[in-house]
Image 1 (cartoon, rainbow, N blue to C red):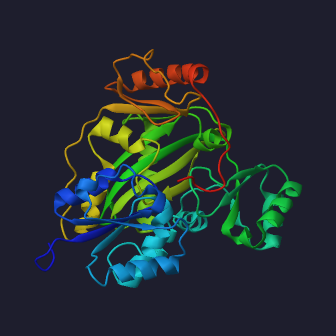
Image 2 (cartoon, one colour; image 1 turned 90 degrees about the horizontal axis):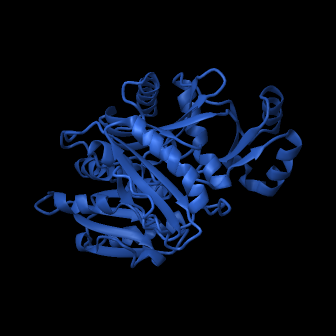
Length: 401
């Protein structure tokens, strides 16, 4: 409560997600406002927990968004603003700074959205990152390509899930892409391609420290899945394994170095096939997508959306207490499907605790007390999915909402 009234939180999302965040804010006693894009006005939001819904056109300019929210603030107090989707983070940070509302501002959010900023900061803190160069000064770009063997990855600085990335095999191949990018070149970087296994660590951060973290291993690297199709999997790592301990330590060092005060994070790392070293790839101050939060809740009982909501509402005014957690193991398998509503009844193992019902998708969440059982099932199901379901589509140049 503030000044005898409920705290009002504005949730901003250009994508349909974060329903548990909204429910938790309402359960805590907040007045909840939702700002979303016009085509999601009637999506599956928990409307019973939302006091008022506002809509905005897609790709609304930031200045216009500031005008719109400032207008709404004339008639009601807004105490917190949360970006439920990664692609709204800069806009929400600008809103916080303009309205002087607690939370990450534009400078802080750069480290969790801008791949160039996060790499430079991580390298300053002694964390290993693949060699990279900002696509700004051509002499430096030429020096990089001469010094660092190809292939390289052309990466947009502020996209996610492999969107807009391209593998470049030679200097001659790069320049036509830069010509095509034109004035957008400086919004990209060129990075050494390091073959390896890809991992992610998902965390709850309280007062700059890690209150909770779980390490996971992807099956096929997400970049390959997004660009070439196939089956997406991820699973909880054995908690006593050396790779798990290494990942958790690097993640702790990373989050401390980037200066996040409180919130949730999804960080990705790569272990090189040549030498076994761990490299930092990217980090976001958000809940991981592709059912990752469901995997974590299935294994531990910790719902990251729920914990994040409590952190946002408390904003440092209330001590954080992590709920009691379990140490089970979980995994997810997911793919695009040729069928509109795939029949998964032939998959009947008792470890299946959730079946994905999304249009043109097939997938399960698995749970076991044995991490090897999860790995066995994911390996087996991945082969069967290719035969039974898998469909592919080109990776988009920008997110599809």
